[in-house]
Image (cartoon, rainbow, N blue to C red; front, top):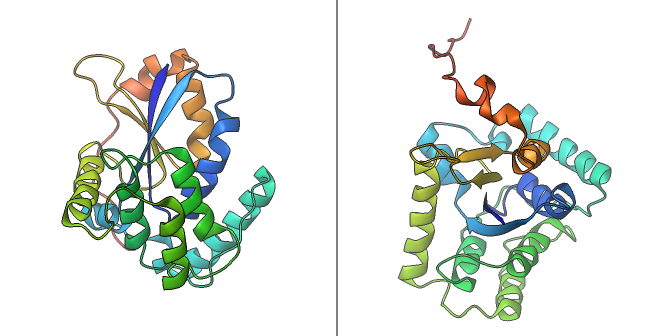
Length: 219
């Protein structure tokens, strides 16, 4: 059984769509998923990136595209009343739910559906309280240990090369090798090929050093 680590933040519609699509994309594979909540803003800050919704035309495109992608894959999706929002209460709730900060699929589904179905405000205090009551986490989401666990998970993701969500990680194939990370909803077919043992992953496109160079400046 192949272990998969699913790094995600519920603020991302692509993480929601990948979560919904995963069982169908990997049907027939033997795998076990470990769900790891992380703070997307922390990843973006570390790598010096801006989020899609911070760029006005990209924001508009993102909201249109994710609704098309949901329609295409048959997933229910309604944009929350306000986006972006502060995801920390939801992330801490997830961490508080799971053993060692690792929630199960049902808990993740409840949080992702809270955000991406119905079109209500994701950060509404009453809705958050009702969600927390339904999930009944064994730890207080506001506890210092929970907050620290989320920070540590985000740092761990960064150390593994995670720069965005969703990222699905497979363990290294050999001692001393790096784990295989697949970023984005559109990487699910690539992940499936890796799980199926596609020899492409043993060849130069994946294994060989990639070209390096300075990023081009404005023209």
